[in-house]
Length: 328
Picture (cartoon, rainbow, N blue to C red):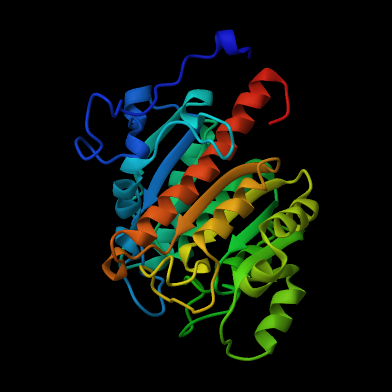
């Protein structure tokens, strides 16, 4: 479809007419999904679920904290030289309401809701919620694209087997995803990992699943550009899912999270790595584990809102380029 045939996207509320602190707190002050006819190119969707956490709860409130912090985002992204909300229709699809007392049922509910959104042709920018939600999201994305490449930004591996006998927790989603065959095991990477483990076997098991690891120390020593280049080469042109646990950032940059670890990346490093991935085929993404009860001055929520903004910009650029038959 040519640009002439593509409807002009409905963008955010004009902040020169309505102050940023006024009005409904949709992501980046974007229209709701129902305000754009129920169809969008990128659906920003919340999943207020944190029953899978192993330490501090509170990520169920993360999505709305990110939305509130995103009021200050502006429509032009100079780092990527793009106006994402003009290139493609981006809309806030509200929240997926999942059972907080039954993890198995919640996982099924999230998967079904993701199926519905992806079935409209949209890509998803999901705001968590704890990292348990990545599994049903990946299941849904894989139905559409086949096994996907995965970049997992996190302080932790999240490839453990069970907690207290539970298969579905925020520490197990990517082991389940590998077992289910929904990930392309030639293109799996953790980024930002650090901190103590239960034992060296954790790393051995993780490697057997196909994951490469870029630690936070690697990012510090090698720099964002070199890391992004390595990741691009590993991903190639495969359909890519990016999952970002905000605790990949140092607690100085993201105190509002359930399992903080010292020695993490800066928000600047994270954003620069993401910008370096703009040529990758990003089909959907999530930002999870924002727990505002432990936040200070919205530091974590602001970092998460900007992270989602960069991811949304990448998807919007690629959608626009696809319509024009060019490369983003």
